[in-house]
Amino acid sequence: MPVHRPDPTRRDFLRFLAASPLLAGSWPDWAGGAGLTGDGGQQALIDRADQALNVFDFEAVAEANLPPAHWGYIQTGVRDDATLRANREAFSKLKLRARRLVGVSDIDMSVELFGERWPTPIVIAPTGSQRGFHPEGEVAVARAARSRNHLMVLSNVATTSLEDAIEARGAPIWQQFYPPERWESTRRLLRRVEATGCPVAVLTVDLPAMSNRETELRYARMDTRDCTRCHGNNSGEDYFSRKPMYDGIDRADITEIGGGWMDWAFVDRFKAETSMRLVIKGIVTAEDARRSVDHGADAIVVSNHGGRAAESLRSTLESLPEVVEAVDGRIPVLVDSGFRRGMDILKGLALGATAVQIGRPYLWGLAAFGQEGVETVLDLLTAELEIAMKFAGARSIDEIERSMVEWA
Image 1 (cartoon, helix red, strand yellow):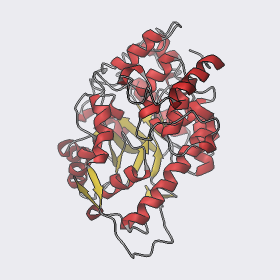
Image 2 (spheres, rainbow, N blue to C red; image 1 turned 45 degrees about the vertical axis):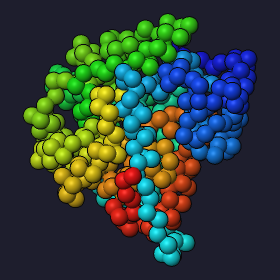
Image 3 (cartoon, one colour; image 1 turned 135 degrees about the horizontal axis):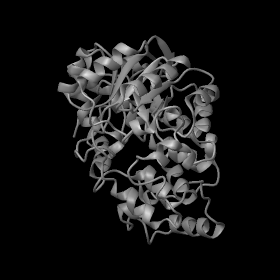
């Protein structure tokens, strides 16, 4: 569906609601208003990206800009959204043990992944259907990644081709995979991605079945347009026909996003088929972390799909320590789901993550102000991380350690 921009009357009304103390905290989770009473506190709608004090300022503007179905797609968890909330609540349970007199005037936030040095550990996570949030979609995000020199991972269900995203980024990016069940189609996808010079394949394994995303469905019912071609079950000819990564693939081979048929034998075959490094995304237990290493994974992403997969009630922050311990330094461990502040990123790094992926915050920035919004989200998180490192007494990412945090 094309992006809908609300008329001035609706935007003015939402601006009034945002400023009204009468409604603070009174909206149900599924009915919106997350940007009004979220972690960033009550806020009026900003008019420019440079007015944002934190990433939550973009959340409110994104809600005002988007039609209900598109907003619901960004914000949804599964069932009661309990795991989505658990991802955020976990950060309040992990306290900082601030250090003093370390000498933190010079901070080095750079990290190395697969031999490449990045200025910060903040990675742009794969998220689908970004042209639903802004006309330039993934191209705007790639340009923001280029201007701020961030690692970007492109979703397999992006609304921009990998080739166009790489051109906008000006450098190779990582590609996420939801592989078709038919092996020949998976092989064709691999050949296409390899031909672009993409160095890393990110195999997402946390959707063995399509999750029940009730918030998304509720918002779609509020939309006055025909949303059936885009929303509902993430399957079918119409859905995949708008995903450029599946061009040339027999869509009869793609029953739905996810892959309940995948097993460790498939991981072995996938790994053997490609020269790209293999990152397995969606690991949340020590058992699966050890098996990932045993089956040749070059890195792991601890992820519960931003609370959009299983309603496990377990945050990735709580899952991270056992995965790090099981991996025991043999491969990098990344983490995502719920990271909204620089201090959140510090906590993830303190628990052993090599890097942290962000998802919803940059989508809020994209929906609010396009490329400039994404850039400002990256700038805010980077600045907050630098401040958090100074209070933790860490002059570099390598100096961030487990002793800097403790569970409440």
